[in-house]
Length: 253
Image (cartoon, rainbow, N blue to C red):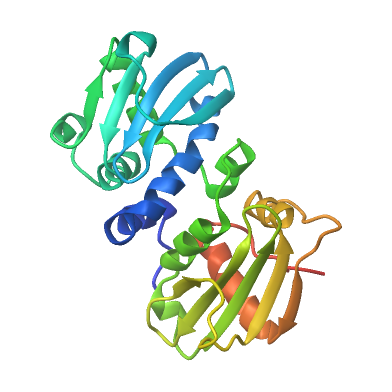
C-alpha cells in the first residue's frame, strides 16, 4: 500500500537536520500564531543559533515578533530560550525525549523558567494544521514552505512521474522556485532561475494568492496562472494538499 502522509511536524525535524537555516525560519514564522494558543501576557527572547535573537511579546491573541541584534536584559523579560533549530524542532514535534532531558541543548534563563517550560509544552501538544496557524497570523516565506511541503511528499507517491514545475511568486518576498519530481526519488526544491532546468509547467501567482492558498482560502481576483502541462501541476497540488492535510481542490478556475 502507498505510504501515508507525513506530518509536517516530522518534516520540521528532517529539515532541521538537513537544512537548519530553513527550519529556523519556519519556526520563527510560526511565532505570531502562538497568541491563539496561550492568551494572557508574555514577553521573552528566543535565541536560535542559525537565526539570531527574536523578541516575542504576547498580549492576548496578538503576538509581536521583532529581530534583535542581541538578547535583552534578563530583568526586562519573562525568560530567555537559547537553542538550535534541531533541538527546538524536536521539542515542538514531540519527537525527542521528555522536555526535562533537553537541558544540555536548550538553555532556559530568566525569572520564570516554569512559564518557559509551559510555553514549550503547550506548543508541543498543539495539533494545529498549517492552514490554522497561517490564519492565526503565521507568515511563511514561499521558498521555505515549498521546501517543507516537498520534503513531506513521500517518494513512493511519485513513482511513474517525472517533471519539473516552476513556481513564480510575484510581489514583495517573491521569487522563482523549481519543484523537481524524479520518479520515486525525493522531491526537491531549487531556488532561482536555472538555465539547466526545463520546466514542464509554470505556476505564477501573487504573494497575496500564495498566502491565501496556505490559509485554505480562495485566491480572489488574483488567481494563479498555469502555463504548460496542467496535469503535472495537478499532481503536485494533490501531493502537497495531501502532505498538509488540506482538502484537494483546483489551483485555479
